[in-house]
Image (cartoon, rainbow, N blue to C red; front, top):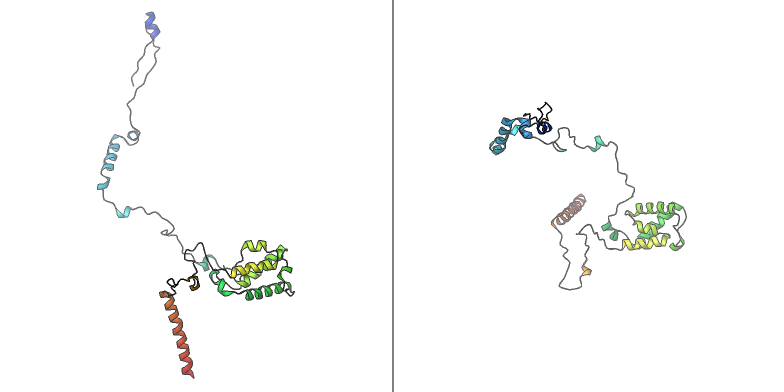
Length: 235
């Protein structure tokens, strides 16, 4: 540190200088890393950075980042141990997939299920005129529709249930559901084609079975032949 003292007013008036001085300080600039590590350490650090690719990697010094898969404390999930007594309650009496609805029901069979469901819930005989049977009671409509879905095995669209003020509307809407060819916007392969869709003689539907379907059919025929052979030998 250098100390410089000067009284400007005293110089102008020709008076002797007195010890009324202003101090100025100066110090050498040092970098932050230099202050932290010292110049020698900083120099060694720069050399390490330059030669970092020349150093050998110790495999034992590798840092392992733990996650869900390699954690030593990970325990495999067990339904019996982690969720004892857990069961999925199936409220439908049967399950009919959307692609199978068209082949599973006819209007006559639909009428039969509606009639049985209604009479079991009300204890009264269902009239032939569905228009005379109203479903304005929301509590009954929801209970009836839930039981009907259980007996049919597939879900009824919420829009249909919301507008089903009469049993006839519900029946006609379900007739449209069971007669509609299955499609699915989420599945690009959900295209149901049939031979009657192609009227041109040079365009036809290839109905050849794939390998898995052929193997399944072969196993079914083989099992059927074994049973028939066993019955004949027993006779």
